[in-house]
Length: 540
Image (cartoon, rainbow, N blue to C red):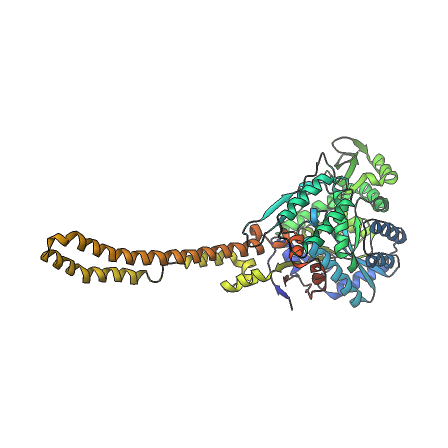
């Protein structure tokens, strides 16, 4: 087996205790994520609700997935979704350049594996859906990649020029062919040419040349990587998505004060239970964005008016706009989950630690709008362990768990063991012995022939110098060995704990694919991962 599981503490305490099943954290959610009964209960709840727009949703998904070149297997899953007894597991991510950090890949793997597992356990069809947050306008978070070159100890960061202006979202940010060409040229120049490089270059260049914007490039890459495993892709700015979301936009406008009040009460309960507040909530937040031209601007509520930096609307004006032009609206971190719940018959939402902490605020908001929060399943966390790193670890008697949980302390202990070289005392004794044995001889030579004083003294000095020379060479040799050891330690840290964080939060997938092939995705999808909240070590 090439998978090992370890218990790894999370930085976010609420997400950590939710994952561990603490009642203090579970109270903010509708279901326990690791109990089979939760999924059976959620299924029964979904069966009691109609999904009147299911056919329209499936048609929109089919058209979009055809457009981005998704695999026939994914299109088949969409056809299944048009049937009443089909449900989804859903999760998503920003549209990062070259798919962004590794956790994007890991989330897709988790979605696919969970859909398959739930289909078998519940006896119904469950399909995986990846929600591309193409409307996010934090372009600085998605326009770069990190990688680690072989035998190096520092991360490389490469940013793609986007020509970003104003508050453009990723789905509105045009791909400039020259900028993409420069970016990919620099990227491949920094990679070692392998048998896999040509295939990687073809994939990246062909998908980029077929894409109009950053979000579409991301979608085409994900389709090529995961489509054959049935992953359905949906991008949040697609017109059919906005049209279907229209009724929820109207409900959010109508119940805006109540939503803010529930969020504030949830924040108070979270703080009262001793958890840090992950989400900043304020009474005037409208929890929606509105497009003014191409700019996606945050709405705020002041009295009975809703405004952004350019315009002001009455509630009735905004509601009418949501009815007639839902494409002008966009969900924020709070209302995105409501949109997904409305659109899809969702058994489970898969999210990272930060997302889990966000969702702790939402349970009562779902209920206010006549919905129910789905099972919130913590995203599987994975570290890829290469053979080179495995050998380095074995050389120091370390495990991946040691690196991820106590590497700082181990390094301190390792450095503290560095002592003067083991023969220092013997060299000192030899010098002393030479002086004790040879000095009387020198003095006797001088007594018999004073003209030999300089020669005798120099001869004694040469003997001592030769001993010193040998000791210096030994010290230099040992220092070189120590330098190699220091370098190996830095390589371990850069590969498994880059900049002090988990590998999956920094490193990009494609340098790994360049070494091990695009079928690394297939190996991950087929790997025997355990979905119990433990951290997974996958040996490549």
